[in-house]
Image 1 (cartoon, rainbow, N blue to C red):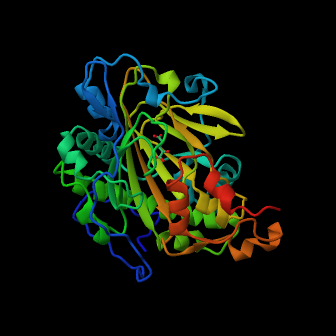
Image 2: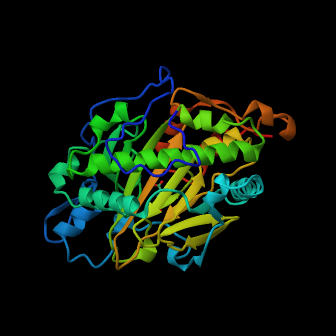
Length: 395
Ligand SMILES: O=C(O)CCC(=O)C(=O)O
């Protein structure tokens, strides 16, 4: 397992090959070649040309820059404008405390545990990843979205399990109300299995993404170890759960939108994995559902936003929460976010951790193979926490 220690400084050498110490014999990665899109969402415009929304919002704007009204396919049934949410912040945790004296480590672990139980979201500072590397990652992602359409469409796929995928709107193969987002996603760690499938353009992409994902993986391991401690599990329990699994990078591109109060970049959802580590390009747009109220997060440069996914809600038997979140869009600026998810091995069964069962009177969730859980969640056009509800026991 590529673990992080308190003394490990960020590695700047992109050729610094990590040591792969984990047994990956149980991995069942779907290493398929990207396939082309199975269906298109075409619409004839007033001047007789045809918009194929499957080519992405950026393409739509590049080819029809005169658009000043939101096409009806993107108008979502929203009760109130998503832009009216209260702007505030989530708990902020100084991660350097994990490497401090024992008292500081204990209080930092408690702060993480409280944030996991009460929010499912927190912001981290002093996390050890260099700001310049974060900026470089955003830059290469932006350069990908700026490529010509033919280059991006090489990676288009309707397969939600595709190891590298360019797409738009929600990550689903089914027809759905459209969202104002383009994206690409690919697997990260273990790099030796996945690197060949990453974009070849821009030419710097692979080196930058590898360095970034390596640093983020170490950060995820550090957080996983603190989460084990916070749950009162054996040292390394969550680290092993996540460390034997995989990483997936999702780069989201939300261009300026003519009527941002009528649509969303990404619908309310919780993440299927264990831990997501997210950053953005300086433009705000992420909202978190906290006790039934949407709150809009501020942008704080150089920080990461961490959120818990459904796997950790299940593993903790409901003690920790995977919070619903969504992305809004705005009329002026392109927003880019890079979310890196970490989940257990695809073939592993996710279920509440046995040592936690006594405290909470039995398991609140049905066991499910993680790969099946992803398909359940990603293939649905109903987002929110519907997949988690499907595996929650009726008590
Ligand atoms: O763009 C954002 O801030 C949210 C991204 C997100 O939730 C996702 O990629 O699953």
